[in-house]
Image 1 (tube, rainbow, N blue to C red):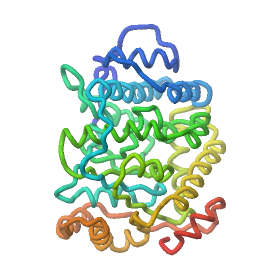
Image 2: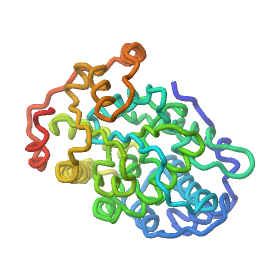
Image 3: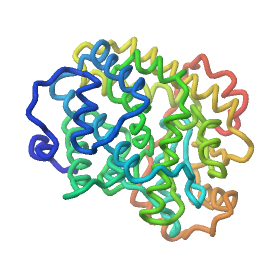
Length: 368
């Protein structure tokens, strides 16, 4: 069960009394700077996100506040990081990063890899607010508030979420207001169109810096997961030379309908004006482009794993990944216990063929 948290009380320390202007980027920047003084650079992404939230999403009042806090907390983390260090170094130990199409087993594999003794796992609360501020540390409270709202929204995220469990490192891309997380939650069509073709290099530069900060706070091999990294594998590997990539694959005929269900569920819950057909069209473009770029940019150095193999024998897959990455053999007993506690749903089958994934199928169909 997710904790039920009173959002007013949870956010009381960060709610100035002022007239609220809906989705004004200057106001959101002011809110962030009230908690972490500094200068926000590269605000174009924030402007586009706010415009799309205002013009496309038209969120319910209940949904608008948590989305606003999600944006502001990302800006606060960026300001705190800038104040803390100007270093642009990559983590000393190359991280392990699991990515691939959504609904392809990335969460399951990530949590199995996170069982390794040397793994530096980043829990949700730390991904939500990766840099501590001055004074009382409210980061865990903020994370529980975010999850409490998610639970009360009746929109299931598709994976178990808790403030102390590892989650998607795409939360860290919020530092540059450049994250598919916002599309997953709300019908920000204009923002998605921009996001799919914008230069992600500045966002990944900030991502590299915050990973280095996290490693310094708690050394170890960062073990991370975000399906949408597969959209920018070339930029990711340029930002993190030596990163150990594990790319998950699954038949698009299984992935696409499942992803559509989740996206449409969130869009309908958060926006009374959500157009399911338009959401499906946008989500299809997103997935097809990610698949196309995966087929183009996923080099031979990456470890490619099929969903079918992971479901059939997860212990053998983890052992293979460890061997390919040069890691110590995993603890089979620990893996077996985790698998027994987290049974996987039966494999679903789809009869229709999803168009737009030809290059991806040509390269990776044997893994389906």
